Amino acid sequence: MTEISNTLPGPSTLSQPLSQGTDPCWTGLGVVLGSGGIGTAVAATLRHRCPNLTLLVCGRQGPPRQDLYVDLEDDQSLESLATDLRERNLPLRLLFNCTGRLHGPDLMPEKRLQQVNRRQLLEQFSINAIAPVLLARSLEPLLKRDQPFHYASLSARVGSIGDNRSGGWYGYRAAKAAQNQLLRCLSIEWARRWPLATVTLFHPGTTDTALSRPFQSFVRPDALFSPERAAEQLVDLLLQQTPEQSGQFLAWDGQAVPW
Ligand SMILES: NC(=O)c1ccc[n+]([C@@H]2O[C@H](COP(=O)([O-])OP(=O)(O)OC[C@H]3O[C@@H](n4cnc5c(N)ncnc54)[C@H](OP(=O)(O)O)[C@@H]3O)[C@@H](O)[C@H]2O)c1
Image: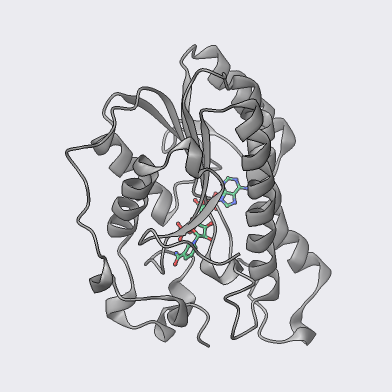
């Protein structure tokens, strides 16, 4: 199994110093979806790097662990999120989707065709592809033409079709590829309608979280990021993105990933 390990240059190849100290001063409302390994660290990093942002962490655990309950696979829950955010009367500055799923109680990535089945494909697509675009649809009414806004979403390099050399993981790969296409479409539409919006897809690098844990024996220890390091790298890139760059699929080191 090389799906994770072959995609990863080691952390030592990080080419540029992190640019703390020169961060743009973002204000308004920032929303992080998901407080798994990377989401929790992204929220902590954003609190540190963008202290003027009012940051909310949302997910299926809800209060008291999270600020708001949101199930991204439930349309009603997405509408409630939009209502709640609107009532806060703050400009929406950032949405960072850190949710996703690779395995679960009845879900394991497929090693061969005979393991591919309808239920698993739908489960992979539900959170990894459909949720990110429906989240954007629900929150679009909060955007304003003269207001900067970033929508970042975590994809995965294994969702790259051009970079797929080892096969396997049919559902997860295809769902991430579908997310990439859906958000690329979104970036093109938003460039016309919301010229200050920036949409970015990120590959965080293989990171030590519950999602990657069953597969970490295939990863060199020096190629596995801590969630804190992954978050620093992602936020560092996020803060550099401008509307002219909208619609990119970037790896943790700032390199464009082939679609
Ligand atoms: N870790 C890696 O090596 C790696 C590599 C490449 C890409 N990624 C991507 O990075 C993202 C974050 O991964 P992670 O490593 O932080 O995984 P994680 O620790 O498993 O976190 C995933 C989060 O998604 C949330 N989630 C799942 N379904 C949801 C739903 N319907 N509504 C709301 N939240 C939901 C989970 O919440 P619950 O607690 O409610 O389940 C959990 O907080 C994923 O998109 C993953 O594909 C990770």
